[in-house]
Length: 599
Image 1 (cartoon, rainbow, N blue to C red):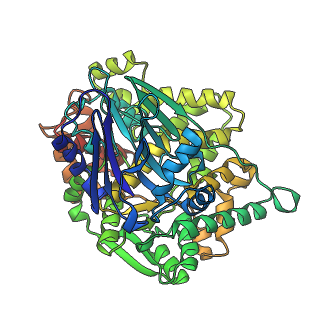
Image 2 (cartoon, rainbow, N blue to C red):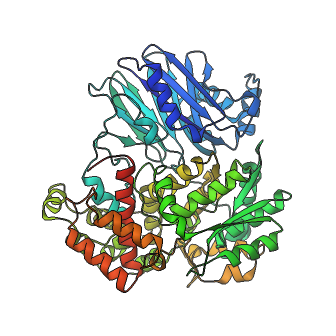
């Protein structure tokens, strides 16, 4: 796992500037920093050494090809054996060793051979010199890029805070990104909060040569299910899923450093914990909770799973009185505003993982998006009303469209309307169009839309950036290609069975984790902000000072009387809806403040 950066074309970039880019991303690669420059291009790497520690120095070079990469290739041993049989010789045991030999043999299609998570930058000087950027099918690893003002040079980096150290970084904030953030809980790609910066979408290849950018997005190829005993059943689906996950976890637990698991107490992480505990002796598990008594406390479920699986359990206990300082710290590591309240606890959790001596942590992310684990999916799929998407779009938003229309100032509302209207309305219309024209049924269309358009930016970006802020690699079993292909081929009537969401996961986990965890109502992993944003609590005072103070950076975008009314309502009668709005505005204001930016 690493952080990568570089540029191609145009005037050379000073080495001191390139070193500044690397320093900005140092936590994501503290073990070794390397840089190669040749004329008008450069490739740099900050390494977090996890696999093939003694031989993993980057950039990798093969003839006239050079590359750097961030991620892990879990099938590198199979690929290595294949390449050795074809006559290629290897010196070390790093997973990145296979990249250039595969590219030499298969061209851009080499990424279809990779199983894992990755962002790759490759300079190919054969024929017309060019830069190529690739990322994995799910978008687990990010790449941001921008063009110079004259369009001759492309700069890229794993993190926006690294990219921003390039001397010609276009740091102007796109004011319309505020609406996209509030309408989507994060800024969905390929646009970013900066007008001149883009992010690579999942499964995308970028080619840059002679000032021209070409983008190709390739979906994960299908793989029909070979059903045992002739037909699809829930029992068979659960058995197949269990087998796939065990194979994937066996490869994902292959590391030259200690591996632990995040155990939230929910179904997906508990199932992951159970499989991993059967493969790794003396496995360590981590859970985060808050001092005091709060709603949605899952620590006792996590402890039950840890006892059941025999893990060395670490309970990370956060004090809400410390949250104002923690907000400032974790927001500095979010490349873009993100409204998820549990970003705070995710940041602190990975800090504890690092402090305990671990470089790799398994998480249970992705199962809900693949197998229909959220009630909003099911409700929308069963809603036959012609305007079903209007209600659904509010479930994807930080702030509903009705509230946004009253929150925005007339001037900002006019700007949004001139751009085509509220992002949430446009996203809802696009989803309705896809449902009407899709070859899949409505539920599967909702799931695919979420996986491609929302999930990478709302969830995966914060998992990646908040873990790497503490030099921890987060590995995600449910997002491996074999699991995703299985989920895509699975009939939706086996994903949601009656009132049971993500039924194959529940059925598969039933053999391995306590019944109390399998059968309990689904509960999101979150920070109970409704209870924590009330008079006397530290977050309440922080929000009041930040949003209503004279230094608020979005005063020209949000009506201050409306913000004041929302704060008063939350103070007098705390509620989840108002709390989420205030938290979302706090995240935006804090993100802008710590970077000294204004929309």
